[in-house]
Length: 181
Image (cartoon, rainbow, N blue to C red; front, side, top):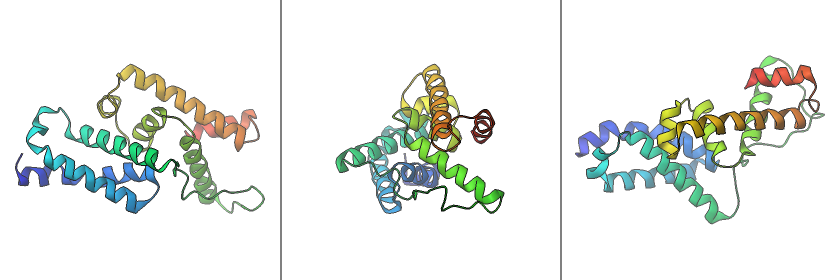
């Protein structure tokens, strides 16, 4: 792959890779460092990139793996780094926008409680918008396994939301959680 082809095909992935890395690291500087490392690795293997069906899937997989490696090295998971703990008595929801922001915050916190690969699958499918085949390539998994894991992840997130935030599972609140997800 030439330098020009690399610029045209690989560099435009920057936003996706950075967003994906930042979801893991919760630190923009760390995420930028990771994406830079991925670009260096991709540049070094540029002559072999034609062998891959999707270079984007390869870059996403490399980003995920590097993020997980960095997290393991730190021995602390910083996934909740910028999410502030809230208490119901301190937060007054003034309008629907505030209510929606709070619901999104809670959903992110619930997703952060998931284990791998459910967390990555839910991130890629429900937040990043990838289809099942792309996720299968990124995570090197079977499409059916992805579907099952996503279903279980969504169910787990609903359970977390209903038990922690929405009146411990009342039917009215369960339906509002389903609307969010």
